[in-house]
Structures are given as C-alpha cells and as structure tokens.
Length: 282
Image 1: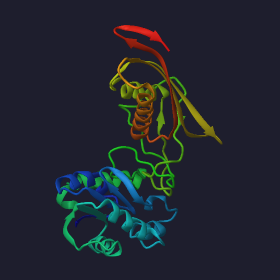
Image 2: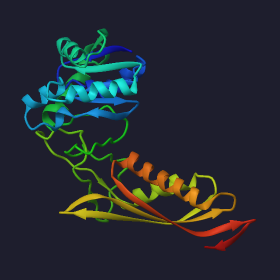
Image 3: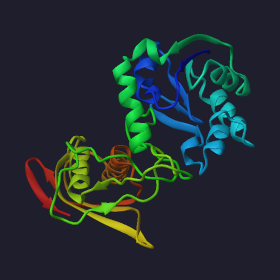
Image 4: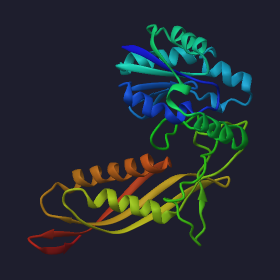
C-alpha cells in the first residue's frame, strides 16, 4: 500500500476533484475530513463537517479526537486498499494525518493549483463561503447512522417539480457542515416507485411489476424510512421463495443506494405465475 495526497486551501474544490484524482492515480481509497472512503463507499470515520465548531472540525479532520484514528486505522487494515489519497489544506496536514494513521510516507503530493484553473478555484470558494456547500467524494448519497445534517441542492434534472406534496429526507447525510447554511432534499414517491420497477423488471423470471406502493414511517415530523410493497407476475422456472428473497434485497439495495433513504422492509406479493404462456393466479 502507498499514499498520495491532494493539497489546497479550504474551499478550493479538493473534494470535488478527489474522485478524478483518485481515478487518474489508481487510488482505491480516499481520506477526506475525517472519513475513509473506499471504492465509492464510506467505510469508517466521522465527518469533520458534523462538528459544531471549526476548532472541533479541525481536530476531527486530523484524527486527534479519542478513538477516531484507531477506528480508521483498523478499517484500513481490514479493507487493505492498494493506494490511499489523503486530502488536506497543507502538506504539513496530510503528513500529520499519514503519521497519525500509521500509514507509509506520502509518495506524491498534488496541489489543487496543478489540476484546477484560477477561475475554477474562485468558483469553488464562492460556493463554500457564500452558500456553505461542501462535497463528500462519493458518487452517490452515502449515509452513516451517526451522521446528521442535510443534503445540498436537489438535482433538478432528476427530482422534477410536482404538485404533489414532497417529503423531506431526515437528518441523515454528511455533505453539509452543521455550522453552515442549511438546505434540503425532497424525493417524490413516484421516483422511488420507478426505481423499484426498474430494479425488478430486469431480473430473470419477472414478467412484470404490477403495482408498487411506498409507505413512509414518520416520527416527530421526520421521515425515518420506507416500507415498500410490490405485486409482481413471475414466469415458471425458479424457486419462488428464493427468487422473492432476492428481489426484496434488490429493491432495498437499489432504493437505498440511489436515494440514501433507509428501507426497513420490502413486501412482495406474487400475483400470477406464467406457465407455458398461460397465467395462473397465486
């Protein structure tokens, strides 16, 4: 295992470019603001953006809070990344992180000025200072049970405006610091239904998805997660209990991966079974 680093002042777009830098340098793990990310998933750590003061955020980012370094070091030993990219505001900071986590010496340091134009850096600073936006370098919404805060701006091309009432995702994400401007993300139920249909109709022996219902589990005005109900038609040729269990996991995984919302359960009813082109009711 070897280590490289991306260095630049706070708010200059390091996290935004982290995935690109990792890909170009064949790094399969990233350490950014107190969290360990491997293959696009948060593996261990606690985000510095969760701290309520900037002093505590800095201490979290350099792994000096009790138990933090040990947790991440253990995760590194267990997952065995080939190459780790460390993000930091200075060369001294990334060197200190590597030493604290007992990693090898940093073999290569990349400065943000080497990969971003002056105009791009100024734009990144604007969004950080004026709008409080921060990016976690994972390709989709990635949640941890201890994380709180709100997601940054909705993806307009994906979450279209609708006249139906939208629900706020609970305090689950870690892409915006607690001590900065707050925003929210809303997901329409029709989007979740479409995800479930897409996930299930591409599985073998699923003739069609007849119906999908989405039920929200609410507590104290917050959305605590989903229960999904589906009616499907299958074709003959598989063990139904085994196939249904696979479909339940597929639906749960797809919705959680794409939206970051928790799926507490998936109920599937087999409405009909096709045998030699004829449908038999279940």
